[in-house]
Figure 1 (spheres, rainbow, N blue to C red):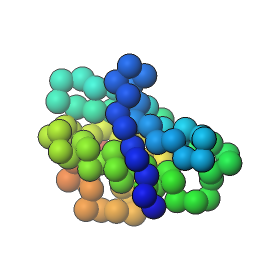
Figure 2: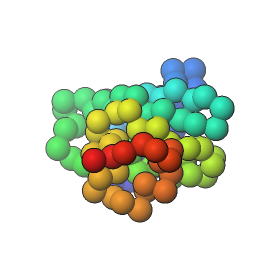
Figure 3: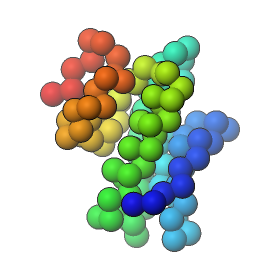
Figure 4: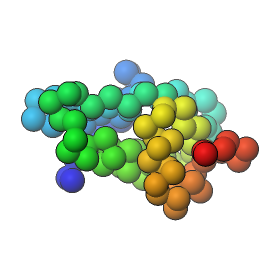
Length: 97
């Protein structure tokens, strides 16, 4: 999945425009932490792996910035359960069951 994901600080979200629709992950940044709060993929794009591709690129960006992740979004938490290698970004003490 070749998405072009961009950080939109004005809207506090990472965005990708696909086929005229915008998929996004909302966040809150506080000091060296980033809280991913909500992932949204338009219904027209569901089931195409876009949410997972979006999460992957956001995690890559978080790692580049050296931020600590607090995954409040259930979709992001589910992704982290399946991709254990990304747990290295998660704030210590956060349990992803």
